[in-house]
Image (cartoon, rainbow, N blue to C red):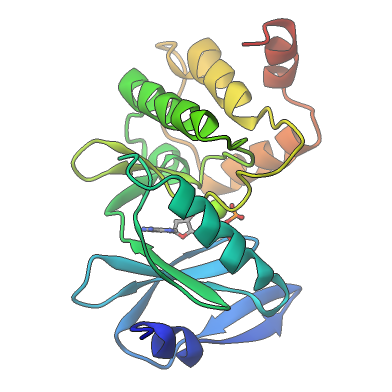
Length: 211
Ligand SMILES: Nc1ncnc2c1ncn2[C@@H]1O[C@H](COP(=O)(O)OP(=O)(O)OP(=O)(O)O)[C@@H](O)[C@H]1O
Ligand SMILES: [Mg+2]
């Protein structure tokens, strides 16, 4: 029996300004965040998150569910509870993404970076190839541990340097005393864009020092 299917089916999406906007009618679902593939909600009175994929991205639901099954038991990844044609249900992670930490000036410690690094290594040991690891896909929990919350692209074949570049930026810039710990969202988004265009020095440093 699919326990959470009716929640997923209650979400409708509307195309608006080139983006999918979720229409929420069930008061037990509270919007938590969105990305390029899905919108995420917390299910009231549970510790579970519902990720509902956009109409043109529903094929990712099964892929992400399969990957969560392969990662099962590694503490830095949410547990998968249910998967359907358009959605998955995973652990709700109370905390902030690395992106939100930068926005709010909350310290990202070396331990958080090491924990994420360990988690990605554990995924590799299970035959996966973590891709698309960016600042909105890693969280610092309210108890101070690190969680990786978006694994949909962990079976991509091409090697992704995102995480190596984040580590480079962290050690070369973030850990320096003069480096600001709080950044306006718009500036962070602009930096993200420049990064995608390969216009930030982190790429070059990572290329010189492959790890
Ligand atoms: N389990 C969770 N607990 C708490 N918040 C979450 C959880 N999963 C996702 N979120 C929030 O929802 C946002 C979007 O989720 P997610 O990264 O899974 O979507 P996506 O469409 O796959 O993203 P991407 O653009 O990286 O492909 C996250 O950045 C985070 O803020
Ligand atoms: Mg994401």
